[in-house]
Image (cartoon, rainbow, N blue to C red; front, side, top):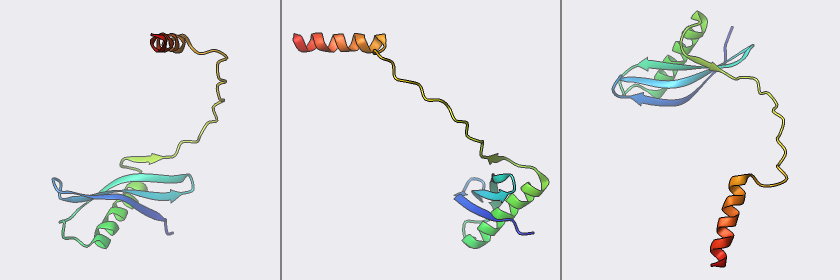
Length: 103
């Protein structure tokens, strides 16, 4: 079974001498994002580094390990209606500005 994966935000971490990126794996439950790293020198071909990152994410996915994120279902929040009169700090600021204009 082939699992579709997408790679994004790839950087090279010189201190760790590894490529790091976010791998998104599409599952039946929705997309899961894994923070993956692949130890390799900076001279490594990008395709090889990308394959290493995706392979690492697949292993974490299969073993149910690693840091991952998923989308949370959105909840519709009712909109608040605008108050008929401004709040007290706004009225105070309006009166301050109008007295400064009058002076």
